[in-house]
Image (cartoon, rainbow, N blue to C red; front, side, top):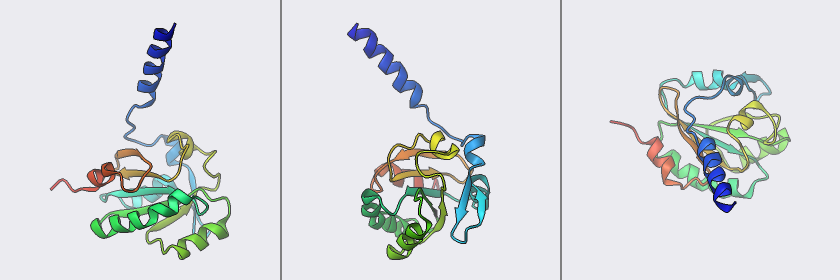
Length: 164
């Protein structure tokens, strides 16, 4: 019986660890809220940066691990200045989200996922169960890093390096 459970577990994990290289249509159509309360889809945001690498930082103002990662993100910004830094907040409180951007001097593009981290097509697609969460999109719009939870993870730097 233990062998059967072990085999099922291996199959389940291998099926769920499939490397996603594109966002689903539903995730692409997720409405994000800008700092000025405007609405824009994830697809539109990504399209604005076509041809550039994008580091997506999914975070919240109330998340201690997210705040601890801020200096590491700032170090990445110095090391990789040509990368677009896209911060997606799962805060449910817009005033808290906006205060945290100013308090921690987060430089980059900022949007809010109004449904938080427990609901929405984007968070469901990426199976968001922990923040911070880092993703890297390459110049062709492919997801090259699907999941990192520590800003000092070497896979982030590897995904941000240029292929020249």
